[in-house]
Structure formats: C-alpha cells, structure tokens
Image 1 (spheres, one colour):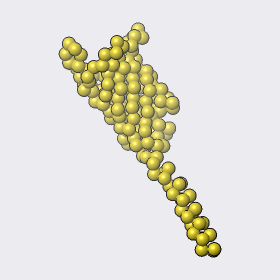
Image 2 (image 1 turned 60 degrees about the vertical axis):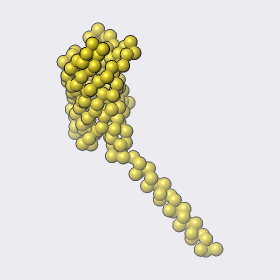
Image 3 (image 1 turned 45 degrees about the vertical axis):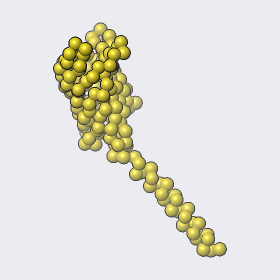
Image 4 (image 1 turned 135 degrees about the horizontal axis):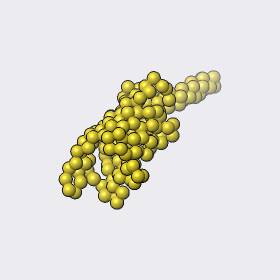
Length: 155
C-alpha cells in the first residue's frame, strides 16, 4: 500500500513538473519581445506591371503600437502607411501595409513575411504579395529590412 502511494506521488510530481516545463520550451526566442516602437525601413526591388517591370526603392519610418497597429511614411515616394504587424515566438512575423498617396487614396496593399534578429532590434523580409485597389495582384521581387530606432528600449 505504501508502495502504491509513493508511486502515485512520484507520478503526480513528474506530471506537474512536465506541465511547467512544456510551456517554457514552446515560447521561443522572441516570446518576450514586441515589435512596438519606431523603426527605420528600406526596401528596393521590382514590381511587375502588365506594361513591364518597374524598379522601386523606398526609405521611411513606421511606428508600431503595442497592439501591432502600424502608421508611417515613405520619404522617397511621399506616401503614408497603415497596417498591422505581428511577431511570432519563433521570431518570424507578417507586416501588412496599406500604402496611400498624399490625398489619402489607397495605392496598394503589400504583405511582407519577416524574420526578427538581434533581440527583435532588426528585421529582414520579403514582399509576398502586392494587391492594387481594383483587386489585381502583381508579382513583386522586393526584399526589405527594418531597424528599431530606439534599440535600448524594452517592450
């Protein structure tokens, strides 16, 4: 009888121990970081329109709030950005940006897949889709990068 009680206690202790270790292992290296803050961004590449390929080069800034909402500007083309950004526990993420001209007209929606590095102080990505307001999807070849402008700040 004492042997069964001892085994039961050992088993319960083991199960509770495993239950507390499993979540810690699944969090990943970016689970304690947030993309919130101000970032410098740049990307260059090619958008392929029906009339031909057009080279693109952009630099700007974005600000991400703690809920992943994004606003920003692209200095070269004088456009504004609004969208959302996510960061997964494995340091990958998605940035969906709606790009507007100076009068507020939607020009395009771009989705970026990214990876965060250096304790989420920098990100590298590639545009995976570009959609025009009429629903047309255009092929793109557009890598980009972003760097946190306030790297000493914790989120």
